[in-house]
Length: 173
Image (tube, rainbow, N blue to C red; front, side, top):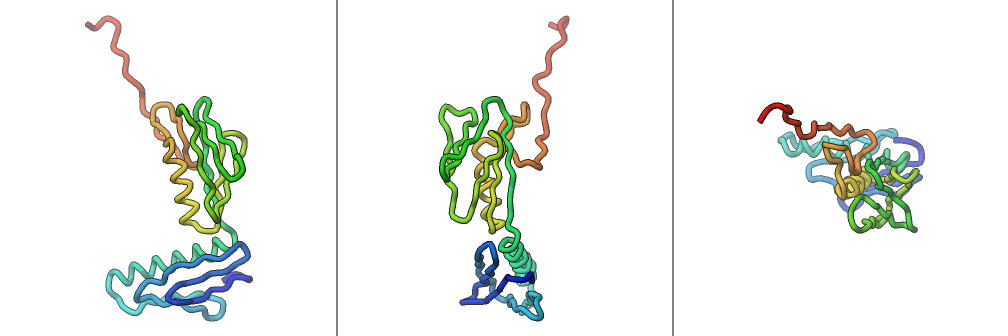
């Protein structure tokens, strides 16, 4: 565990506090979490398939919570297409993505939107789940299409392009 991070178990929930904020997650049945010598130990009480799966899940959730309250998470989106642009108006993201109207996305609590240029969006926050979900919701407004690649895509996403319509030979009838 890094310096400045505390982990507590309250009412069957894990609470992690750090410099960037506080996160909490419900502890799964059959799993126990404790801190010894600055390390987090996740142990399971049984050995059935469900408990083993929860063991890995809780270990991963605790690691993500610790990383979130120390460094935070971010997801970058890019808009590709003629006339596609994004603007911040207060805490609202205003997207122009080829519809007859603009699409407004409200900034939820704990999430920060940063607009770079007029076609890049950075979603930042301390919860990996929330950052990923908000980024996926924004992408879902206009997902990239396979013919011209227009739409909203993740910065590291590769859009597989398809060939357009095949043209018949001139002499064939």
